[in-house]
Image 1 (tube, one colour):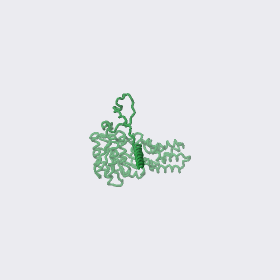
Image 2 (cartoon, one colour):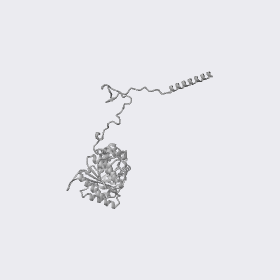
Image 3 (cartoon, helix red, strand yellow):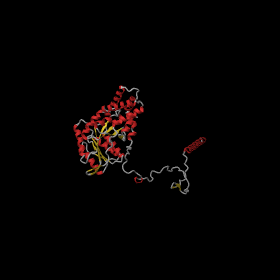
Image 4 (cartoon, one colour):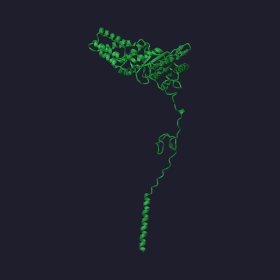
Length: 398
């Protein structure tokens, strides 16, 4: 019995020893404590030499802590006033855009040069020349005059040299367009009985010609010439027109006079715009009017009323008619009606880059007896340019 008790005791002791060993093995080792990190002053450890270069230690901030002192608005240099666009310079715009114009009008220039360069210029060829000019919307009378002049010069000179023919064609097209016509815009302050006043420019046209957009582009063009401008949103029939015009104005820092309610009297808005322009001593007041159908007598009469009301301040210096070059001969009929109502002084021909009918420039001038003063050659904000006959013809024939 005693032997059995001894054996059992030994087993218990061995078991306890084994359990203790296992517990000691799995117990995590105590981390060796690190000495405290020295306090840092001005990025250096206390007691370190100021001329020593120290790398960041563990836990050091790699960047300026978020809770460090930050700059306030007063510490930051901000531009004064609202940020506005800087329009492209006006000078040379048409030259810069001539490639776009040349691509769309290649049928006119290159087609004519190809016909005139043939070995034999018989009657059939001259008829093709005439047809090409007519398809370009130059008009019957100018076409007849150009063809007759070319036939005479080719007969006398007997040339088929492309460069000579190009020169002759350029001369005839320039003669048809007119190089001695005053195409300048009245954008200088005027002197009247009551003293100096802004130049007043009204912009008119039918629905869908991009008239309000054109007014915005004209404003940019004037700002590029360092002119102070006020816009008048006298298109009160289309709800978005005033907002659209105001957006164009804001982009170049130009104020817009508009009505607080839709359907307001457009003549009153135009009158207020000129009044504000006089008080602010600006250079130009630019008035956008509602698009109208030329066969709606009531609307056309109202346009005449807008002009008469504005003239209480003084004469309207420019009435610009916006025409879509892609409408061709239909645009000429529109132009004639508008000219009777408001005495148009100049044409703005838009979308000229989107048509092969560049001859519309000749036709519209002959129809109205007023010059094309501005041309639109794209959808960009600065794709509006003063019309330059030589640059235009060069683009046609390039």
